[in-house]
Length: 106
Image 1 (cartoon, one colour):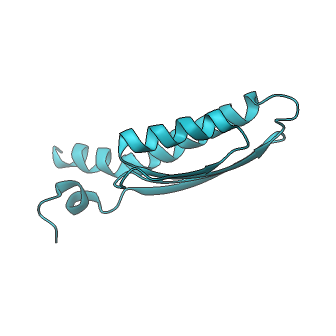
Image 2 (cartoon, rainbow, N blue to C red):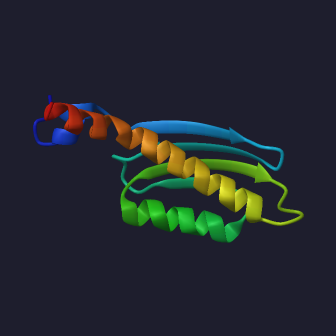
């Protein structure tokens, strides 16, 4: 047991994965909130890939994103669905921490 890292002791690893499939996009996101800042993204939108790299690097978490979408029309759907998927997987990765903390006071 790693008593130096109370989060890993309390809830284990904070890793999550989500897939989001819509009429316009197909998005897959894997996240490790206890990572080292590595981003591996392929969205077809260079600026979005750059921002995901910066987010992971400065946030010190690992993220793997694969997205295809109707970017030949507009990149709005791909941007939106990647953001929704990251939000969803981040929440599910944090959820055990919130449950553990709230249960500790009952």
